[in-house]
Image (cartoon, rainbow over all chains, first blue to last red; front, side, top):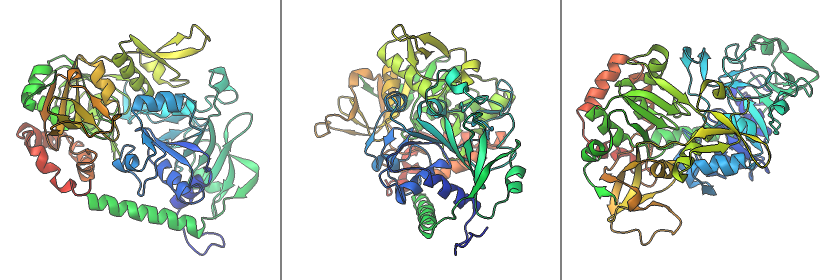
Length: 263
Length: 285
């Protein structure tokens, strides 16, 4: 894929990470989920949001890793953090206590209302595939001020009906969160490799609001398991800037070199 | 008071068939050497408790030692799935595995309640989450002051907890540094606690006063096992052996390859082998 008017080519994966990074602000306190969110959060910190507070569930608060961690508990996260707290404190005081503005999650299975399954494919008692499970996500989904989700599009991943509600998004839509007594906003943003999605203000169904450069409606529809709704005024996501691309690629190169050297 | 002893003795004196046991560590300081000793001694019908069951629980499950697992994230950290645990849950191989699944918040709160001597933990959790449907020990309680309905989980009280730490002093006080996870709670919640350490120092006199130190009288036995957290890392001593985590994904994918690997690297190995496994990882720590 080439960037419209941009001299540099970029991949859909890079566009996804960079679009996700742009959503974060310097004043955010962001609980970083396992996998894809980590790169986006650190690109934000290294470009437009140097003051952002990144938290990983291992208890590292205000971490600023030079390379992307292999897991959520790398020593690098602790070495560069403002403080490292025990895991019970992490979940009780900091997440449950309402100190986290953004929870940034990935998903194995996602539905149109931002509900996430990372537990099982198939029946819980007799699963076809046993996935790792929820970890910190069920409470991130209900306690963080709002939830951003990032994942690459596929019919296997974006499904009409998820097999298990690991992390509650908007449930069946509408005011389902409020009916369960959840006071936080829930999923407010979905960034895929093809588009940016936001929930409809009333139904809470994710709606495409911006297509990444060069992406067609048909491509989005063909890689999604539900019937996709598009906003009336559809924007085009600005292509990655030179600085954004360089920051992401340098981060990935440093990460690769560091982890190769350690072994 | 903590007694210093060889690892084989520390495990044989503190773990029994049918026990509930926690081998805790949150990506960092995983007590691998203690788990391997338990495997060599061949315990059966264990209930294993752990927030993040990783390679060592995959190994104990694959060896048929585990009746039940209480957990909140059953993955190979940074790599993917745990294939022996999957084989047990999906196919009942080598035996059926009962599972009790929570979220991290649920497990962390339950350990804390165990350490605090409370019967259960109350917290704001599992809202809309389907775990509350499939896990019978997830219940609710109403706040007597505000009327808010909160999640309730029973306290975790393992028969024995195993952790790995950087240092013990000669009196048997134990220092845990870096990402401390839920280890303090796991020790204080348990009836017995066994700690493996990288090294023993004369005293802790020059330490910062607020560091995480478990007093000697909270610990049953200490064994000195340098490298005992391999392939995870020990902050300040050695880094994570990521190649071993990646390799595990293939080893554990095949039942026979797994059995051969366990024979060579665990059954026929000793605690002393761990020092050699981290030698090339020390420079980067």
